[in-house]
Image (cartoon, rainbow, N blue to C red; front, side, top):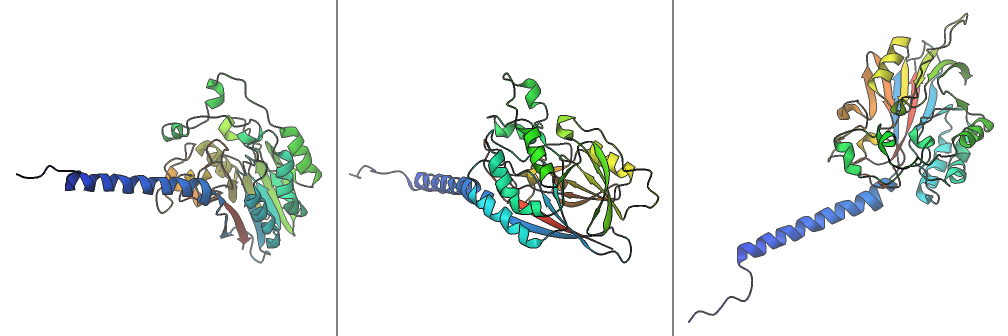
Length: 309
C-alpha cells in the first residue's frame, strides 16, 4: 500500500517559494525606499550656454522641495556640505517645510548657504502643512485640488516668518516680482512667480526701462506647469528654474517617472529640458512629504548649474 503524502506537492512548494521570494523582494524594495534611497543625497551638475560672449561663468546652486522635518540629520549634513561649492547664487524654488515646528531646523539647514546671494519663491508646502492622504492618488490626478476638497481647514505654516528670515539673511523674494540684480559681475533680470500649483502665480514679465540689456534672463517658479513655462518663454527667458515634481519620487528602474504631479509629461519632469527654445532646469528635490517618506530610483538631489557663454 502506498504511503500517504505528508507535505505539499512539488508544484505547490515551487509556488510557495516563488511567493515568498516576491514578498521578500517587495519588502526589501520598500525598506530601501523608506530607509535608504531618501537619504542618498546627490549633486547633479549641468552647464548651460546662455551668457554673452566673453562673460565670466556663473555658478548657481539650485535647491528645492526640502520638505523639512525637525531632526533630519543626514539632510543637514548634506546641505552644509554644499557650502564648499561656493556658488555665486542660490536659487530656492520652494516647498521648504513639512512640519509646523520645522522653521528653526530649516534655518539651521540653510545657515551656511546664507553666506551667498540667493533668491526664492514659495511652494504650497511653504504655506500649508501636509496632511495624511492616500499617496496612490497621484497616479490618476495631481494634488492641486486637495485643499479645496478637504474637510478640515489647512494648517498654516509660518510663511511670513520664514520669508522675513530669508530676507534678513540677504536673500531676495521673487513672489510675482520682476527684479534686476548684479551677481558676481553678471547682470541678471529675474522674473519670479508665486506657486502655480495653487494658482497663486501672476507673471510680472521681466524688468523694463533699463538702458542696457541684462546678461541673462532667469525665470523662477515652484511648479513647472505648461502655462508657466509658456509664459516665461513668451516673456523672453533664457533659462527657467523649477521644482515640485520630486522627479516622480517613486520611479521605475532607470529613473523613469510615473507621475509629475502637474501637467508636464512625466518623461520630462526632471533634469534639463527644452521648452519652446528655453532651457528649464527641474530639480527632483531634496525631500518628500513626511506622510509619504519614500523615494525609489529617484534619490534626493541638489543641482549646480554653471551658466557660460
